[in-house]
Length: 400
Figure 1 (tube, rainbow, N blue to C red):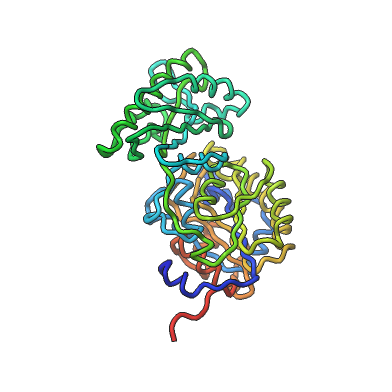
Figure 2 (cartoon, rainbow, N blue to C red):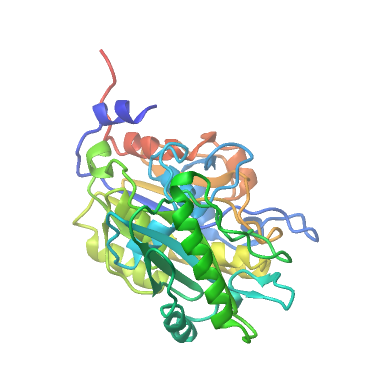
């Protein structure tokens, strides 16, 4: 189904849709038990809901393609991530309240740790706290590069945003994060002639950052990725006739939601805070995106037990979602982050859709295997929203 067809049949109704994204939800069996994190976790609420819902597995981009968080979420929002390429820098920048205009390029930065040979030992510098990165951000803001200005802003923990401003800056830059350990950062090379000036400025920035941070045991280098200006993406409000709101504490997801036309709600730092925000806004919107981060963080850290615990924590909140009475409740992930891989992966992601019209599974639980046998089968993540709109009776009949 194309966006043009959806737009033609979409209708404004009072029914309410909730998308709960458990970041990095999918997993793989632990070598010692043969069970995934979802199979090990004690999840009575998710299991009960699964038996009254339709299950399936979403494919974030294409089979075999490992998605970043941006493409993974974009698909769940109803957009083809191969058509709308949104980079990490602009999402982070908007997520912390920056305005990115003409002549500005934003990039996502990580403090990382390298050894004496210049090889990366920790891509996230131990997830160093925001308080500890404040003086490091101050150091980075002393950097001067040729041909443009650069300003660095803290995001959260090891993350920051660097905004380059000047004439003739392009965004077609290869990132410096190799996404693995034991190797040096990559060179920030221009992928097209129009981005040569930007690549040279970024490489100057990284070289000076390394000098300023040298001598530290951790957070002694930076990685840059996702160079981007402001993208052009059609609004969810116009495409799908929705009044959407995003409830997420992490800046990147707030930024992406803003790009697709969602209102971004003020909320606290915990998932409990997010639930309180959802409850307070229930009467004001008809589409709610709620983000849960701990599943992904534990998976990326390779901590199987912690990911199990984060799934169990999420399960404890499910009754509060149901008490609000959404017409459609979707629960899924933007991608899989198996603890045994300690990274994002290409594996299909468990997905649940609950409504009065979704159908009911014969299942005893919510897991990768149960979803593989589900009514929805395997389908592109971009088709989740049309399914939700149909179940919420927000799509008119197509054709005569």
